Length: 184
Image (tube, rainbow, N blue to C red; front, side, top):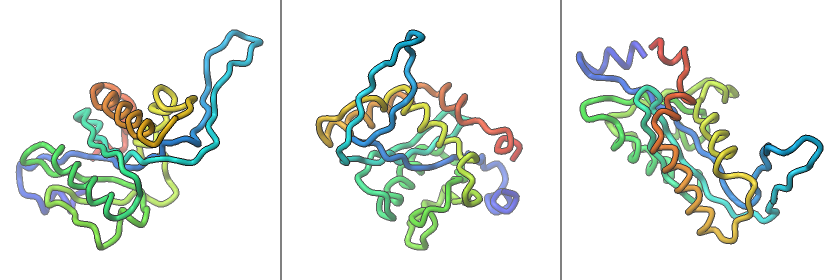
């Protein structure tokens, strides 16, 4: 972070962003449900395999999010997401984007916007990325225990869930804050 800050010039605000992808679709997870003691609540579970991906990034300090619903996880999709994040960064600010070490995150084929610096998180440490907790919250509240009739329905629900999250900046702030990240 010191290296990044030194290269930016004085007065440039740094926004700390976290990024990840989540697969949403017909073979979804069953989550806990409230039920009267001694009863077994029913939860539908689809065995088909159509899905889509939510590419999501959050800036917990500002309560902002930037997301896209895309059919694949690859370098092209990541480039589209980087462009979307770049637009969400405040004018004149610079984003440090923390993400896992997936191949499409660190490939030299990425077109990284000038207002973003990518910083990989340590491998095998998903607990450091608060977007993992965002996915859990979205699944628990808006995406699980359902059967989708079509791919279009999956995409529509993924869009609806992401938009609900972005409309609640306090949720992003609450779920996404990390003490170690705020010390930077």
